[in-house]
Length: 169
Image 1 (tube, rainbow, N blue to C red):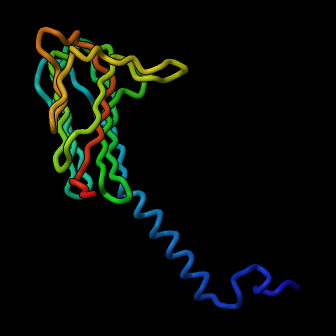
Image 2 (cartoon, rainbow, N blue to C red):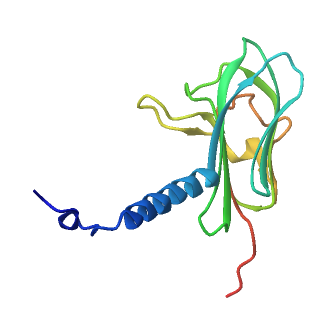
Image 3 (cartoon, one colour):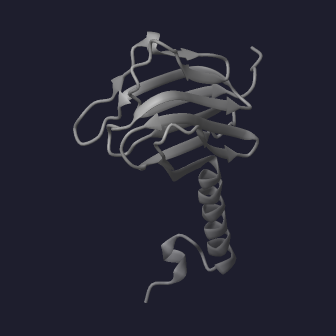
């Protein structure tokens, strides 16, 4: 009969319990750095806001849309392991939204935008993301907003990555 020492753990149940605790904490820590939630985008021309937060970092998606019925969307927020970057993505999992967006704004708090992109179609089912033309939206330090008169009312995905603090060289 094989002894427990041939498994590499020795005869210490404490070591096994410690290893399980460390792995559980690692997984819990990773879960605390990312969150994905579903929400409904509601037509009717009324301005709605959906917000998600991790620690002191926050992402808000504000919009007004027309046509159709509620669509199920998702928001994911994430924080890098060293907490130097915060990300926010808002998208329709089915790919293309059939709503007409009269306005949109995504805002992050606690970070300065380094990268942002808006899409008229999210890549699913073998299709690629289709980016909006850069003249359709504006990227500021903390917001991504449609440009009035330039935005063609199609939105299916927004992605933002922000730097949370200034790193000295």
